[in-house]
Image (tube, rainbow, N blue to C red; front, side, top):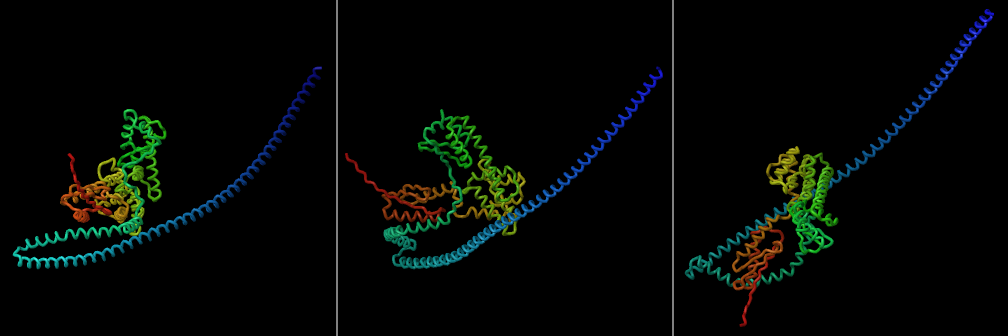
Length: 522
């Protein structure tokens, strides 16, 4: 019994061991099978990745080739466009050069004509001198004869003859003058129309007139009271902030802004227009509007300067100089806009420097900056030359530019072709017809001289220069001057004005003689 149980246990043990061995072999077989499948999948994935990589490489090469071809096409197109623009620029340069050469030819021709006229004038002057000498000799002979026959000295005889001639001839001269004056008036209109037509063809319209006022239109006159404000608070705030005189008078629908500073007037005009449009006019609102408009104007000045530098093809400048270039737009000198004058000088200087073998771009830069100091003269003391020179020194401008600034007003000698070109261009720009007008001081001095000439004549009570100095009204004493003598006086005054006063156009001398008869009924 025990033996059988031992055998059964042994059989079971052997069976269990055998089963474990078989099971283990089965697991090993499954593992190897899974391993083989995994390797097969890995090989398939690797092969697929190689295919994807190969396809991606081919696509990248195709894309690279396509981009390269497109780049080459764009480059060709840009080169073609660049060549066309360069050709156009060369044509413009040639046209400007031809125009400049024609102007030089005309100037040379006019100089030759002036030389011929000067020679003719000299010849005529010699003839006049000869006639004067002959007249003196004849007069001496007549005086000797008179002296011998009348027993008078030479001076006494001369005085008697001249006085008698003057008395006998004065009335005749007056009648002749009036006769020819009437004839001249008949043809004056035709001649005046011709002169005006000729002057119009030479008129230079591209300049800013030197004005002292701006007019702001308002929809109704009720706004004038609101602009003045309670106890004048609004108008005081406006004048204090804007730096202009605000003139509110009986002129319907208008407010006048007066100031010599174009920049301030432009800002003031915009501020008041916005306030009128908005309707809310009080000190705080005025200050806010002013700050906003001033910031906008400052930004516009910078953009204006940047655009000018870009258009002229100049290299970078200091931001402060760029802003001042834009500010020249609101500065006038002798009635000529400073920015327009500077641009004109820059272009002319570039052309001249290029013709003389100098640096065209440097000449343009010097021409643009030669009057940069004028943007500072309203805010700082000193001449625009000194202010401009110091400014360009501070911001490290080229020495040629600094020399041109000082040289164009004779403070230094031009040290380069470019500086000399700027001096010549500045003279050309200022001297062309219509470019500039005289300043107020010269005008007042001329008016004063005209009045002094008129009042220096005998028999004149008063004289007034009117119509902007183009007419002088002379009041004669009726007891001392008759009608014919008034005609002679007008001619004498006009002749003396021609000899002593420098003026454009013509001045009308109007001598007025008035007689009054007064009676009393008692």
